[in-house]
Amino acid sequence: MYRTHTCGELRIEHINQSVTLSGWVQKIRNLGGMTFIDLRDRYGITQLVFNEETHKALCEQTEELGREFVIQVKGQVAERSNKNSKIATGDIEILVEELTILNSSELPPFTIEDDTDGGDELRMKYRYLDLRRNPVRENLVLRHKIGFEVRNYLNGENFIETETPVLIKSTPEGARDFIVPSRMNEGQFYALPQSPQVFKQLLMVSGFDRYFQIVKCFRDEDLRADRQPEFTQIDCEMSFVEQEDILNTFEGMTKHLFKTIKNVDIDYTFPRLSYADAMKYYGSDKPDTRFEMKFVDLTEDVKDSEFKLFNEAEYVGGICADACASYTRKQLDKLTDFVKKPQIGAGGLIYIKFNADGSVKSSVDKFFSVEQLKEIGAKFNAKDGDLVLILAGALNKTLNALCELRLEMGNQMGLRDKNKFSPLWVVDFPLLEWDEDSERFYAMHHPFTSPKAEDMDMLDSNPGDVRANAYDLVINGVEIGGGSVRIFNDELQQKMFKLLGFTEEEAENQFGFLMNAFKYGAPPHGGVAFGFDRLVSLFAGLDSIRDVIAFPKNNSGRDVMIDSPSPVAKEQLDELKIALTVKE
Image 1 (cartoon, helix red, strand yellow):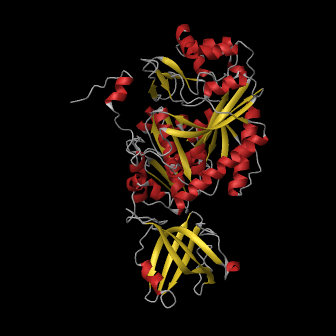
Image 2 (cartoon, one colour):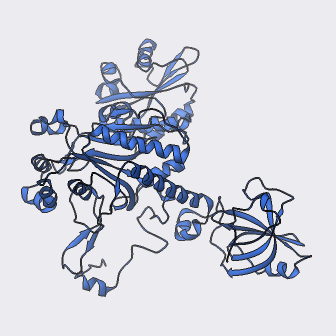
Image 3 (cartoon, rainbow, N blue to C red):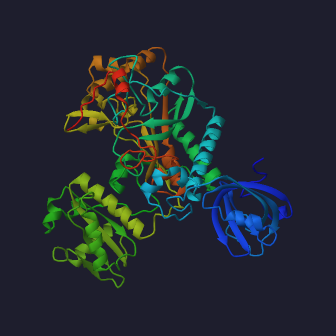
């Protein structure tokens, strides 16, 4: 038996018991006649004591040890004289009577501690060591608990967990596919699924009624903090439902997770915000509603002013930052530099300070009287002590810049507390979006999303204005999940393909199997997919999903630990009939 207890288990009530522990050496402290070792496993740390007076040979044996050696000890539990309240086992220690070195270790490239000295790339290269650290391990434990509670909730709602294929057919919509060549079918390829979308719809045709899967998905797209080439979804579908049925079911799941994982009660119905209002008031379809600071549109109010920028701008809008009129010129210059960053792209920043003494100071004083500035302030309900910040320019570009400015002010004002949660549903997305380069419509969600019934008559006359039966769950400015009510009528689906520029042959080639299935009694159905990695990172209070994935890729899509992607042997390529062109 390697151990009778874990390194996080022993307490004061275990005093005088003989125990066996195994784990990794965290620290060694040699104090002359006494040697202390912190022994660690995934459950915690226990202090070991080696007394030279009673066990001289054991103390000499500890001189062979180094950090991360794997050892087994046998001894007696004793009460610590200098207790450590920072660890659960801090009231006890083990008086070691026997030591066995199970395995030695080279000196790790970084310290295996909560606050490590290893940079991101180094820790990713030695991820198996990084996973020994408490914060990283706790993230993976949290991931496990959330997955368990998802299954627990959905099982209680009569969902059936069903696996769908990983080697599937490539489809032209959405992000780029990862392609897998088929050796047995020369010149043909599988794709790795971007989602199990068509299969879960086929399961609804099969009468499964309620399906879910915690599933790996793959997208060959540019990476950022909340994206990985392979990621995990909580993928779900339901039959004989309307939009509100789906929202209520998965709002219930979200509340269940908050209660069981975070012990947070959410006792209200999540607000529903239309896509149009989300863009109008927040400049984003995933608004952070932990704080107000909604946009105010000033375009019509200032179009006849003497200020040329306002007169010529397609959109003029701003936000009001409560109690920020005390901002100095240096602080305002920093905000101006922020909005002028290339990735934000604003031309400049206009401010109006409604000072606490009732005076008004603005960067456009020479174009507006005090009375005019106060009228603008009234649009924002600005009070003495408030600061109004205004941007002007092209509509979409300015809305985006104003969104970034709002979030930056939220950060500076301490309004984006990671322990506060503000969930909402964003609904009524556009069904289609027009691409100027290709001069065609693309599905904003995917080709199987149903139009809203009241907009159906515009599909022929004005398809760009048709709204979708689509919805996103947004929490704290993060899109946690999204879905839609699906098209289940063959005729409507064919019309959708035509709007998206598919010929009948292309539609048949890509999705003929689904269209054929619809001919055999497809029920009304819809579903949702939650980003499991994003959900876990939200609960963990982290900004990057990499920290909640056991073995993530870096920003270049590489696994630096196993050095992947990598070349393969010429013999493998020859079997696949693939010839590579090598750049000179």
